[in-house]
Length: 210
Ligand code: 5GP
Image (tube, protein in one colour):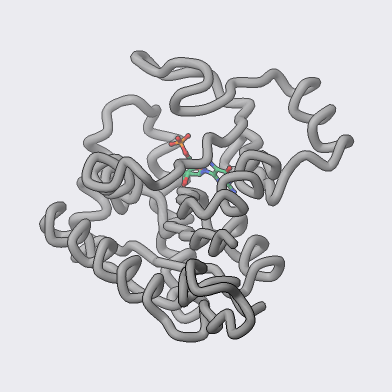
């Protein structure tokens, strides 16, 4: 029997570098399934449909919503973002750990549906660092930057709704921490029960308790 994978949700204020942490984590752990979100935002230079996001127009996104295809969705700034449900469910059922990199509103919605997921909040080392990261991305207008900064300040207050916090100062250290969290969580005893009646060939630890 396959032990379902872990649902790992990485979230935090805009500009904390959670996307970079996820990319680096996936290089180390290519076995983790990254959920590709749908969004109505336009692709940035270098982004490919189906890789960073499934880029949709508003009508298509709303059709997905009407078909109840999202695990969660949220308006972020002026666009919609959503996590398609089926690929996440399928990967978990196959025993793969699944990574979601989503905003705080979305993460808290997922937490209501899946409280046994792992919720990791990424924060910058200082407000100054946050300001520098948001400004330094260089792809957004001044108006968007100001909006993101204000929102990030408010978002920091959600820290305690998460299981773990990771300060993203030195990238590799932040990724080390996330990796350690995943290893520890996948080793928790309450994720398993002993299969008493299985034959001698069966794995000893199987069948997640839920
Ligand atoms: P960006 O447009 O810069 O790629 O992402 C903007 C924000 O949307 C980021 O905070 C990112 O984590 C969040 N985001 C990306 N995908 C999703 C999603 O599927 N659902 C939610 N709620 N937020 C998302």
